[in-house]
Image (cartoon, rainbow over all chains, first blue to last red; front, side, top):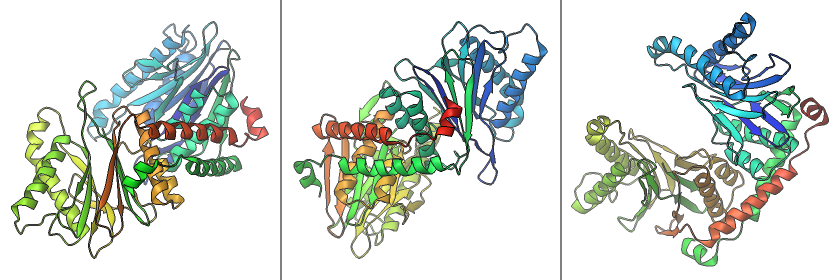
Length: 248
Length: 248
C-alpha cells in the first residue's frame, strides 16, 4: 500500500509521501511516490501516486515522452489550467491501465493507480487535485483543504486538526509528519524514508527533502507525541457518577 | 458499517459498540450490536456483531432457540470453555451465511458477519475472541489485548495507547468512548447511540449502559480531547534548522 497526503494552506502547498511498496509481504521495496515536475518556468507540478507501481512508472515515462516530443497534443508544458493537467494525467492513467488490464486480470491482479496532482500554472491559483483511476478528478474542498490517497484512515484525524486550527506551513509540516508516523506505526505497508515537498504560492519552485528512517527528528517527534497523548488521556473528564455507577 | 471494540484489562473486560446500520446512504437504521447473554449463573457472554445484520439476527435467534430446546448438542449453556462457545457461534454464523449465500450472490450482496465473543465460564479465565465468517477464531493477543471489528482503522491508535499505558477500567472506558467518537466523526457509517458493557472478573454479571447521542458527557469529552490535541500540536518539537531551511 501507500500513504500520500497533500494540504492546501494559506501560504502554499504541502505534500508528503511514504516510499514503501510491496507485492506480498515477502517482496517489499522502496520507491519514490512523490515527483516534482517543472516543464517550463511558469509552472510547477507535484505528482503523488498510489496503486500499481508499474502503471505509475509508465504514466511518468509517458508524461516525459510527451514533453520531449514537442507535439501540439496536450501535455504538462502546454496546458493552461491545473484541471487540464489533471485530465491529462487521468487520460494517461486510463490508457496505461487499459493496455495491461486483460493480462493482469488473467492473474487476478489490478493495474489501476490514483494520483494527487498539485501545483500552480502562472495566472491561476495553486491547488491540489485527486485524479481517479477512471480519469476524472476532484479538487480539495474549501472547508477541508487536504487530500489523501492510499492508507488514508489512520492519519486522517491529524490532518483534520491541522486544517481546523489554520496552522502555518511549518506547523503543518510537523502535523504531516505526525500523520505519516501514525499511519506507518499502524500499517506495515506504509514506511520510511518519507518524501516531503513544500510549495510557496507564486514561486514556481518546489523545495523537497527526503527524511530517512533514522533521522533523529522522527524519534523526537514520536516521543513528544506519545507524551502528549498520555497527558491527553489523563486530562479526559471523569465519567459522570451516574454513568460510572451503572458500569463498574 | 459498524465499529465494535473489546478490551481485556486486569480487572475485567470492556465492550463498546455503535448502533448505526445502513443499506445504502438512504437506508440508515439504529440496531443494537452488543448483546449480553447469561444462559446460566456460572457464565456470562457478550456478543458483538459486524457485517450482515440479517445474518446476525438469525444467529442470535438460533442461539436462543438452541438454549430453549434443551438438546444435548453444543449450546451456550453447556459448553465448558470459551473457545467452544466461539466455535459454536462460528458454526452457526457459517450455516446461516451459507443458507442465504446463493440468493444474496444473485443480487451482488454478501451475507457474512464477524463477531467478538467475550465473557467468562466459571473455572476458566475471562477472555475476548474474534470469530471469523469462516467459523474459526482468534483470541486477543497477550501484548495488545484488544479486538476490533468493522471500521477499525480510525480509532485504533487510541486503543493502542490505552493498552500501552496499562489503564484501569474507568480510564479504559473514557478511551473506548474517545475511540468511538473519533471513528464516528471520520466515518458516517458509524454513529450513536453507543452501547457500553463492563464485566468485572469472576462476577458473572455484566453492567451495561446505552449512551445517547445527546448525552452531555460526549460533548464534554469531545471538547477536552480537542483542546488536548491543540496543545499536543503546539508542543511538537521545532523542525531542525537544516530541514526547515531546505523546505521553506
